[in-house]
Length: 234
Image 1 (cartoon, rainbow, N blue to C red):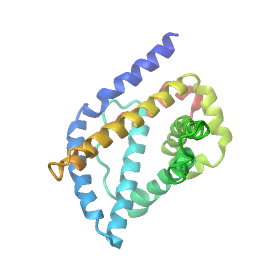
Image 2: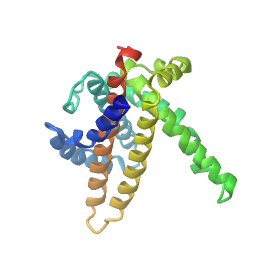
Image 3: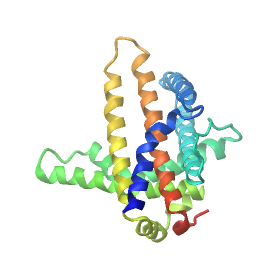
């Protein structure tokens, strides 16, 4: 019981993680840079698409770095990554992230395009899709981050074994992730209603996104750190 409480305390402490060290400056700088990128990508051209791909890839690489450094015992947030190559720093992380999202939240994405309606059966589909996403996203992204390869999520057997080895802490991490994603989405939507100042909604939206991203990835890294003797992926 003390071990479980210790992990839960670590998860709760993750809310302070983004403002440790230079984390607050990274939040401010990232919010401004990604807001500018949003406006640049709004143009209907190939450059807009490339900017969106670069943003997705860079955020995915940053998220992986948070998971890895947290899993290895680092207490401070990493700085923004240096750019060394388009494939390693942008394209590969973007592909890995999209693959994880497709597996974890594919059912919800499908339902968003073909809503089943307000019936009881429709609500069950939405609930099942959300539950599947919350249960699979942590282990999928944790595996990609620690193995640094999309091949880490090809075979479901090692992933299922990892869930079993980290149970019941994995359930806490899944619930933690679901609450963060839901809260972040709600706050992001609230920020978008503040449209009296043209730039403010997107800027606040990015601050919220980056903060919750850092907290979420910190939680995933702590899950591995708490059970590294059992998992031994690195």
